[in-house]
Each structure stands twice: as structure tokens, then as C-alpha cells.
Amino acid sequence: MNKTQIMEYLGICVDMEKSIYAQQNFIDELKKERDSLQYISADPVEKQLKALPPEPRQSSKVDSGDARIFFGVILMAIALGAGKICEICDWYSGIGMIYLALFFPITILVRIVWLIALRAVKVRSIIIILACVMVAFGVLSKIFAKNKLNRANASEMKQWQQKKREIEAYNRAEEQRVAIQVAENEKAVQEENNKIWARWNAITRQVQTAEVHLERSRRNLEEIYSKNILYRKYRTLAGVCTIYEYFESGRCDDFKEAYNKLEEELRMDKIILNLEHINDKLDKINRTQYMLYSAIQDSNSIQRQMLTNFREFSDRFEELCKHQRLSQAEMQKKLAGISANSRQTAYYAGQSAKELNYMNRMNYLSGNYANYYDNSRP
Figure 1: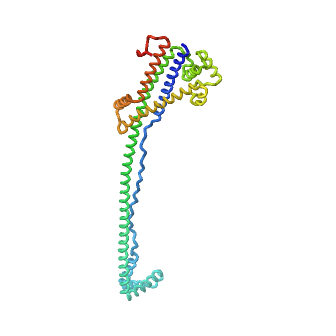
Figure 2 (figure 1 turned 30 degrees about the vertical axis):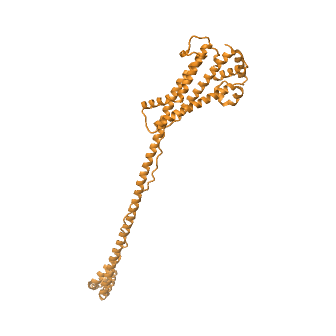
Figure 3 (figure 1 turned 60 degrees about the horizontal axis):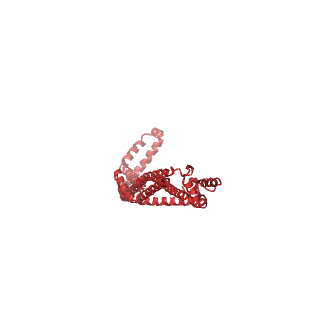
């Protein structure tokens, strides 16, 4: 192969390596996004309920006139029985000195009672009136105190019942508010979960499709590499770009010179072939491996475009699934319908046609002029 054909071959390899690099990164991004998807649950709605106050205890303690009634009754008994008391006391006093000596304290007490009873006989009417007044006053005060207590208990119960009705009305309103809020939250969560479910299915389908196309691109590139034009060690994006840059810049005219140049610069740490380290050192390879830098930038651009195309496809599917839960068959049908008209499908179709042309062209450059892939001439 002459230099022009070598450069055409390397250009084809670079373009396909860029496409494969972009497709792999595209799949990795989709898988990361799919792994980050999680169903959400509705936040609990706190009920601001008020506790019912304890029912008031009905008090039965009153400031009664029991003492006045008691003393009134005693006075009444003394007044009415004063005469009889005097007779008893006289009889007791006449028992004799022996009895008096033996029961002196009792005798003294009897004499005192006798004197009181004697005076009570003289003022019996006044004592009876006073006793009646005391009893009546005690009874009335007891009645009034009981009525006052009943009114206080009734007022307290009325206030408690009013407070209870207010709290029950508030709690019913709060229950209704919470029920409405819970229903709204569940509806919003259901819609959001439907979107997550739709996106997960859209991503899964896209990953499956992308992996099929990626595998096909790798097989096509392997078919091109199988012509054994380029040494196996350098069949990577970084290796192909670096060798292609040597030829395009005029630094090398054949593969032997290119291999030697690459190994020399690799030993001197002027170039990087490990893709895992390249993304962290893009500024460096921009100066020393411009072709590789441009290829990575182009690949990133392709990847971004693929993600943009997928976003359009996914958004359309999410909108269809937003308010409904599709069965597996319905989901596959809608996915297939949207996917068939998506830009992503158009991209894969264009890439397939380009790769087919590359393979036919490589057949031609390698001297195989008779057989063409898909009967398409280069």
C-alpha cells in the first residue's frame, strides 16, 4: 500500500475507533443513569390533632350548715327536756353522801347540768326560738350552697362540652385535610414513579439496542483489522491516532518508521496510549497528540449528541406513561413505535451504512475486488 492508501486505511480505523469509543461511553452513561433511578415514596403527612380535655369531675362538697343544725337540735332538746332534766338531777342529788363521795365528779357534772336545765326552764321560749332559727338558717344555707355548687358544675360542664365540640370539629377538619394531602401526594408520587418506570424501560431498551450496534461495530472494525495492515499492539484509539498523525504530519512515510517513532516517544513519556489516563491529561495530549485529542473531542461530541437524541426519545415515552401504567406488551409496542422514528435510530442506520462502505473499501484496498459486503461497491 502506498502512503495515500495507508492514510485512508488509518483514517477509516480512526473514525471507527472514535465511534466505538463514543458508543461505549454512551452505554456507560446510560447504565449509570439507570442505576441511579429509584422509586420514591410519599412523605408522611403529620396530623396536627388536639387532645380532648378530661371531663370535669362533679364536685359534691358544699359549705353546709350541718353544725348550725346540730347545735340548734341540741338546744331544742335541752329546752324541751329542761324540766325532766331537773327532776333527774334532783333525784340523783338526793341519793346520799356515800354516793356523792364515790362519784364526786359525776355529781358535780350533774349539778352543772341541773343549773343549766333550771335556767333553760325559765328562758325556754327564747331557747326554742333561737334553736329554730339556727336549724332554719342551717337548712337554708345548705340548700343555697347545694344550688350554687350545681350551677358551678353545670357551667363547668357546659364549657367543657363547648370546648369538646370545637376540638372535635377541628380534628375532623384536620383529618380531611390530611386525607386530601395524602391523596395528592400519592397521585404525585404515582405519576413520578410512572415516569421513573418509563425512563428505566426506555434506558434498558436503548442500552440493549446500543450494545447490539456496539458489538456490530467492533466486529466490523475487527474485520478491517484482520487485513493485518496495522500491527496488533497498536490497534487502539490512541495507537491508531498517534500513527495516523505521524503520516499526516509527514514525520513518517511507512509503518516501520511510525512504529519506531511511537515506541521512542512512549519511552520518553512524550505520548500516552492508556485511555484511562488520557481524559485526565487532555491539555498535555493537545500539545503532543493533537490527532488523539481531536478524536476524543469528536467522540465526546458524538456521545453528547447521542444522549441528546436519547433524551428526546425518552421524554416522548415518559409523556405517554405519565398518567398511566402500561403493561409489558403495551410498553414494548409504544417503545418500538417511538424508537422507529427517533434520531437515535437514524444515527445507527447512518453509522451502519458508513461502516459497510468502510469494509467494502478495505476489501478493495486489500486487493479483493470481487466480493462486496451487501453487494455494495466501494
